[in-house]
Image (cartoon, rainbow, N blue to C red):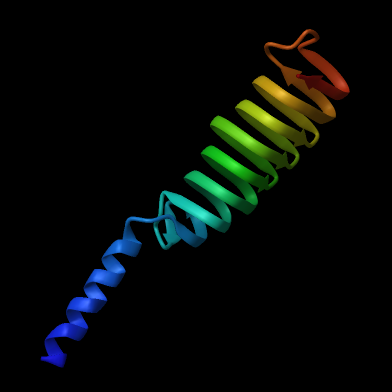
Length: 138
């Protein structure tokens, strides 16, 4: 009886975990990752990656792409296709909507509730869309 219950218990335990967000993800390039998860809840680390949803820290050497980010995104180039709640830090930062901050050489967003700090800053819907050094919209 124990030989039957132990594998059933293990399958039930790990099947529920497979549908949840992975706490950690190690990305070599885009979707070449361990584990190959579309949602990360603590740390996403890699060379260049695409993870649709990150809650926590996305730390990449070359670039990081996300759809929705809550936390921090750090790389040479950061791309976000939907919403950033937190901070993007890198040489080039681009997002559709930011609630927080972008810190880098070039920062671009369509809409923002926060501050951009960098050499070239662009908020498409801002009072002054292009600014040098600091730009903000609240």
